[in-house]
Amino acid sequence: MKVLFVEDNLEICEMLGGYLTAENFEVDCAYDGEQACQKFDSNTYHIVLLDLMIPKISGMDVMKHIRKSSTVPIIIISAKDTEVDKTLGLGLGADDYITKPFSVVEVLARVKANIRRTTEYAAPIQAPEELIFRSLKMDLSNHTVTKNGVLLELTAKEFDILKLLLQNPKRVYTKAQIYSLIWNDVYVGDENAVNVHISRLRNKIEDNPRSPECVLTVWGIGYKLGEPT
Image (tube, rainbow, N blue to C red; front, side):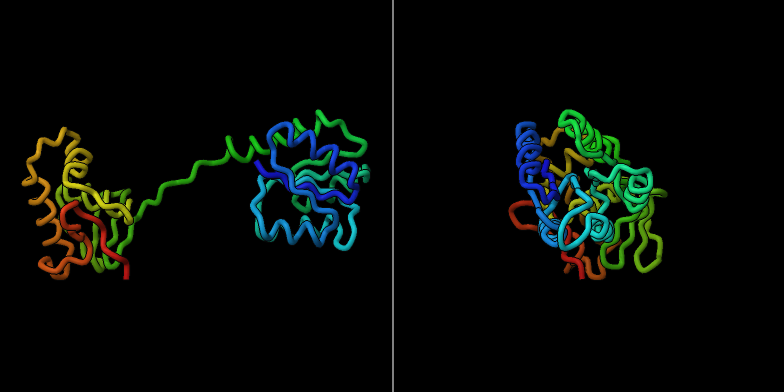
């Protein structure tokens, strides 16, 4: 995990940075707001520790800069301890607020908690309900395929073969792999089932089945999806 620590006090940077490093974090220190913005724009961080009273660009403005493009957790670490400062900081997008002087144990605990919240408890990414390739559109929610808006009558196996290729556009599948994945059975060397279904699928989805552009043959290996236009 990589941490951006924005703090103009070199001793504090080295001290807290040492503890974070001992906990297997990679720490990148910035000593003013300008440097903080440059580092953030050039790297990927899992969390930002941000002092408010820093040179060149204020901590609040650094936070505004970060929030324009990222939801990375930000913990403010500041000597400003009034309710107004805390409310302003949290209102501008900080996830947590720690006042100086601070407990190293508390900082480490807050860092781990905020990272855990954004990684372990983040909402799962929803799989797309539609797969689109050229003029083909596969709707996974109602198990249909259309071409230029016209519904195609595919069998279950034809649908599953096309779905496999659409979901893995860069991959070449052997006939044995297609058989095992689609028929859910051990491949015993009979290519006919796969060949017949590929041929029928091409007849339904290709403009010219004899010169396919969607389901391509990779000679000596198997099949793959064609190149998008």
